[in-house]
Image 1 (cartoon, helix red, strand yellow):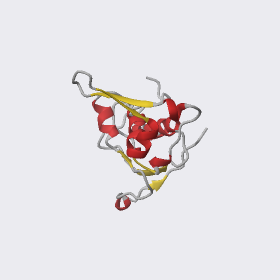
Image 2 (tube, one colour):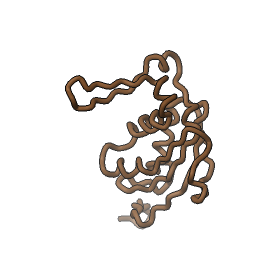
Image 3 (tube, helix red, strand yellow):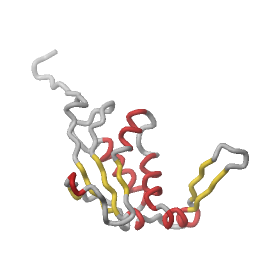
Length: 150
């Protein structure tokens, strides 16, 4: 190896630094919000990003009840799950979901954008979503993070 070659350093999980960020979801489109939140959770916005290490930040999303879909999506979007019993298909429309459990809408979108493995499950636990502006994480002193909306 020549002396001028740069060496890429991998972050160890002990050395990863996690911040607490607070994101306001009011008026944002669900998909655009979810992609940016998933990036923050994973740590891809940091220079020390390492794919196999959890080096992302904790993200607190407030005002989840004020997220939006564009076009005809609010009327057409539904969430599906099966109870594993015969005839156990269950459908929940977006308009009903945003009224009943607005946190679920954001969590469902972000969960689809994190890796589907052990690391992804660990990363997803660092997401905290609240329907209103109140949250119990003031002791962690979360820093307000402005998402780009383009």
